Image (cartoon, rainbow, N blue to C red; front, side):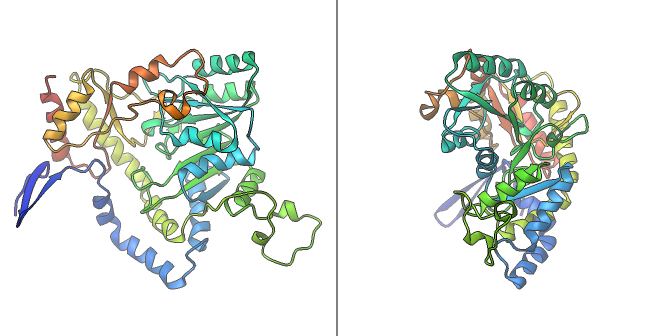
Amino acid sequence: MQYDRAQVKITFACYEFDMTLPFIDLAAQQRRLRPQLDAAIAVVLDHGAYVMGPEVAAFEQALAAFCGAKLALSCANGTDALALPLMAWDVGLGDAVFCPSFSFTATAEIMPWTGAAPVFVDIRPDTYTLDPAALENAIRAIKAEGKLRPRAIIAVDLFGQSADYPAIAAIARAHDLKLIADSAQGFGCTLNGRHPIHWADAVTTSFFPAKPLGAYGDGGAVLTNNAALWERMDSLRIHGKATPADLAGQTFAHEAKYLSARVGMNSRLDTLQAAILLVKLSVFAKEIALRGAVADRYAHGLKGCVAVPPKVIQGGVSTWAQYTIEHSNRDGLAAHLKTLGIPTAAYYPVPLHQQTCYADYPAPGGLPVTEAAAARVLSLPMHPDLDEETQDRIIQAVRAFNG
């Protein structure tokens, strides 16, 4: 049976199914890796240690080694990964955490959890990542106002590429602020051959299935070079269990989880997900290269027909979580592509500082670049298994739009 993969309608009895291209083709990746995945899952089913089983520690070690970190700590999701270092540093009421507004809500929602306030900062117009100049101005404005204590910065590796960590880290050091690299979309990205952990106090990531390194469920992780931070986060992810430091000089003959040293949470990565991620991590470097090749084909095919093509920071290697263009008639182009069975996504149509739940938090100086980008950006299908024939169909559809 022959059919057009871009759009085909198959009718069974009275039911009609409209088949479109996948935005991210997880099924194609699974077909490639199915034998290894089945074997890894079978091992977990055989040993039965479904929570904090041996694959969890093995994955944490492999994850740390991949990006040159000393330690990795897995958790239940990428949002908890952002919260854990803030909780470990006792960031709380009256503290300010600086972050971009051009991001998913998870970046900012963890500050109010602890009682802290997000302070929204503008982005660069080319890479959409945190603008160091705007960050410096925001920190100075918050200090001058005197209502909040600057404590930390969260930079986001948006669409797969590194933020400008040399500049941002210098600002963090100058103001004595902690630095988190939110690498949920960008885990595996590098800048001048170095991963974000080279500059950041902690790097967080998400294993949501659609991420470049995704599980078959939820999951997250924090990477750090600080053993004391890792130990405290390990306590927090398991209900505030006592750590070796907490037990120094004491005798406690029971499991540490039965002695609560602090108020924590329940945020553990399932063993089955760790086993799946170990398989995926083994091919991740190859998949980053494949994503780069897809991005190169897009750049060549779309040259001259979009307002702004993606730009990667000088010296950077992106994991291309999304391939994001700008178009003056973004919504018209999206509607045109939808009629051809080509899915798109707008990240992020309403910036965080414009949403009701964040309206009362500071955005010093305004965020004009963020607001302009929110109305123009559009992401096209992107994954390592995007074949050239399908990609050519997408490119031709974009070029054919005259709106």
